[in-house]
Image (cartoon, rainbow over the protein chains, first blue to last red):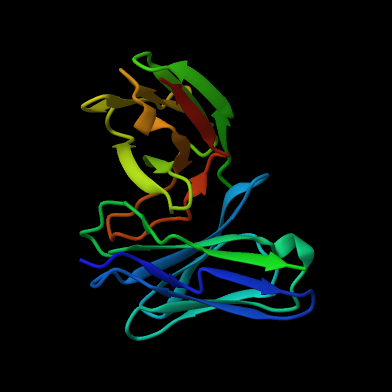
Length: 115
Length: 116
């Protein structure tokens, strides 16, 4: 069974640009959530999508957005990049249904560097 | 919202010794407490979890205890091995019967080093 796949793995952008990150969940998983990981702040919740609808949202500015497609794949977008957006962005999938054990299955992340 | 504090931030132990990591949470409604292990260059991976209706859970060398009254939970690793070296995160959330969950709040992580 394939795991969670995130692309790209590494990218470098400059301030003011925008970036789109992609996440393909484990087959059959309908919930996809995104996290920002930085050395100082740990894992910060961005948002969660289930069946193409945003179900939960963290405390990030509107520059951070996401969406989920009918095949459960998800993308997140960050517009007007700032230096502080440099981080590892992790995607996690779970069943999201009553059979859900609560376990999140994480991808290896997309490391974004903003110059 | 939920706030999870984790201590210590770094921990060094000799191989074979035990390691204990402690977390506290603030939201008494939280009912699901997982622990994740993150190795270098990889995403976090669940190693053990506990629900609020259970006080302790063990899986081989790993155990988790939960004190709902004090709102704290701990990870215990016995007979540590070099491959246990990693960053460990505790977390708290509300897991609904429908399978959804209120956002997962993570602790800031503990870097465990097991010295051979």
